Length: 185
Length: 185
DNA sequence: CTGTAATTTCAGAAATTACTGAAAATACAG
DNA sequence: CTGTATTTTCAGTAATTTCTGAAATTACAG
Image 1 (cartoon, chains in turn blue, cyan, brown, yellow):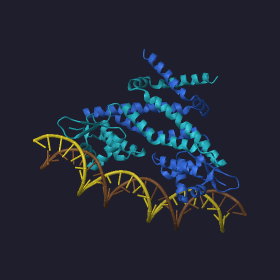
Image 2 (tube, chains in turn brown, orange, red, purple):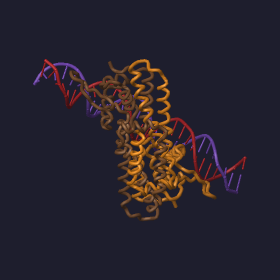
Image 3 (spheres, chains in turn green, red, purple, orange):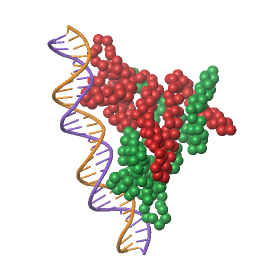
Image 4 (cartoon, chains in turn green, blue, purple, orange):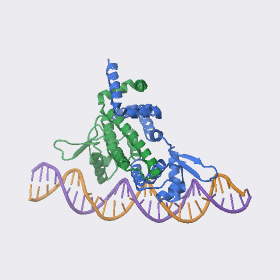
């Protein structure tokens, strides 16, 4: 017996559908993923289609997309021919995957495009100015990327410690501040 | 005489158009913004329409959207009736605005939806499990948001110092690590 | 005011994206 | 193999989003 969609669960699924459509992911794929995350048991494509009222083929396409994002796990149950899908049990695992995939799809191509354009010699003052901006964008994006890469290295345990520390995250950054101001000299 | 679109500048504009369409922003708005960022001088809507080959009304709508994101500055040139638009000169300023706006539009509503749903008493084991996942999502998102808020506080100068430090960013995070492992005891 | 330059609005056309049902492909038990 | 359960593909349709031109509005110089 798969997860029963109560109004509360429904509300959450709908919300992530709407939000998903503000990211690259479309509404129905967002809903499917919310359902998988909230479900304590793996689900088959048919479960999802029935629970959300989508066509079986739409669910198949959605799952294919979620697989391309590496956000779902496919598994088989002995004695059952159907394919069961589930989301990672660990929310931080999911977030790390999302961050990494988005970097691959959005950041990396931009960095390499910018690098390519910056190889050209500027042929006019306009081009010189434009390249200056491109260099700034490149450096900023590269730095932010480095940063998130470091954060992604944190394992779930260490992340939980951070969570428990709560507000004192500010202190970590204060320390960094001090370090920065001494490094200046 | 407004900025002249050379092939190099064109390539950058087209790239950001494509990338823009992977975010919420649509292709033409992305192109418009790239043009504004790369232009050393403020531009009128007519300049933009001519440079990119869009209809005047499309440019008007696009600028309206960019204004709603607080990504452009409107200014008047004495003796000229037209309205001139420009992007902030500081790339970090732009990035901070983007981060903040996205938080407002995507993160904050999600946090408050999750909080609302978590107020309900779970009425079944499925609901109990679902709420557990929702709580984890909530806490994780809240923590990441706190983090980026701190980073956003950095002013441009301090950011430049960080940029200059380059790879040694890792060291900052190592320090944090050490601190964390001592805080554990 | 009046006239004109500039901008915005908006209904509908064009383009894109999402979704479905039917058919094809695949997987596997017997 | 054969037959059946399951999944995938894909052409066509539906829905949504984007874009345009014409009309309305606004801003301001004289």
